[in-house]
Length: 231
Image 1 (cartoon, one colour):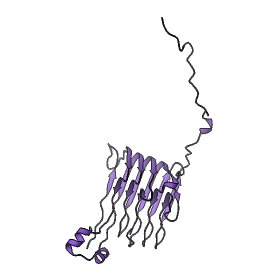
Image 2 (image 1 turned 135 degrees about the vertical axis):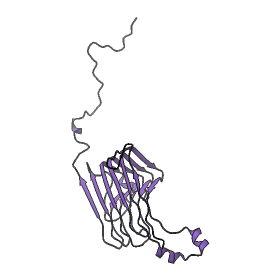
Image 3 (image 1 turned 90 degrees about the vertical axis):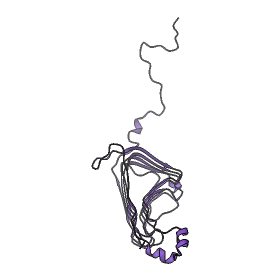
């Protein structure tokens, strides 16, 4: 009774087919916007009261796995509490796949925004989902508390696999969520999940020593004059 899984969401660019993925140019979520495939099977309070249901008994009978989200984009921005979520209050979290990203920017999450696939979020049984991110660069600000989270309460923490060209900026692995920007796959009462960060070694500052310290005016082509007027 009360069981059911959430659906899936796939976002790609024009021209994509079942076997060929064309990344979208830019995806921007701001001011609390969200893309979610959450499983939240609790009945609304108005329905509980109308049908005379027992809220405690109802909570024990509802369960559902979250759906999955897949996004391919050159530039993905989550700003001011915007989020991607495949969490479940009473079941397993879903999967989030962010592929072929040029830049993933995570800003001003304030403990709300970020990328989440949490299981059993309502202090229930359920494993954390899995997050797969392939991006050239991941940028966040440590003090803005924007997380990449695959946690659980009673079940096993999820799994996070990140492949980038350079170390993520302003966000780092921690065993549990904190007041900073975290990458975490912990569990409150169950086994810890896994976080795998694969840095391919590209240094975005490579070659910067050869750049000029001060911009200089372009040299004039020989034979040209400036400031002259024709009579």
